[in-house]
Amino acid sequence: MSPINLSIDCVVLGFDEDQKLKVLLIKKFINEKNDYQFALPGDLVGISEDLFGGAARILKSLTSLDNLFLKQFQTFGNPERTKQKKDQSWLKMYRKKPKERVVTVGYIALVKMEDYIPHASSFSVDAEWVELSKVSSELAFDHNIILDNGIAYLRDQLKPQLAANLLPSKFTLSQLQNLYEILLDQKLDKRNFRKNILKIDVIRKTEEKQKGVSHKPAHLYTYKK
Image (cartoon, rainbow, N blue to C red; front, side, top):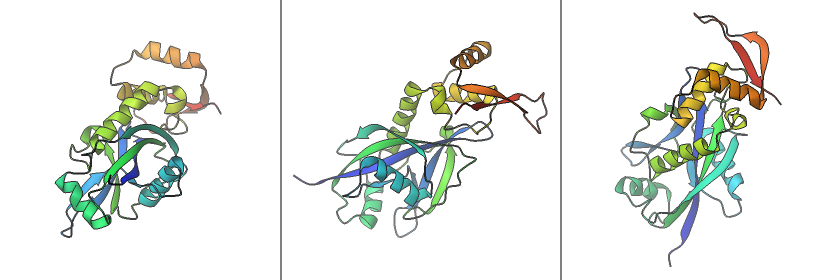
């Protein structure tokens, strides 16, 4: 029986100031001609690493991001997941035995984009925030499947406390509702959403309002500690 390698791939999500949900992708060269493809940040787990420590180390090494919210959500073990020609080209550049099977563990990472600036390193030559609707259908390996399943997991687990990891430290109720609508992929009634969110008692109204907007400035809210 041939060895099975274990890797970790991270779905890193951020919510930008234009209220767009984005995923962080790395760019990597796949041959000596500098042809490239985009991928989720991921790599093999070290022999002495636990999974959470491996996920944190991989994100740090490929994107320079550290101290993030991380949650394991699914394992992906299709025997054919690394066998495509485009992926074998990259594996031959970086793996001693590129045809060995790789099982990967998916992690969700949620980022306040105002607090983190990613920088590519290791075998990634760039790290780029890409709006979810504009992600290529040709990501490395089975990363499109991992991304879709990560979003589905987040949708199932969505709670106000979880959304706090994506929103800026101070936000409007419209921003919060927009984030929910993107993740749930449905429109929500404004009045009912606000009533239900405030009923949960996890956010508080500040004395501050939006600045530099052309419309009536809305109050800013923040999460309670």
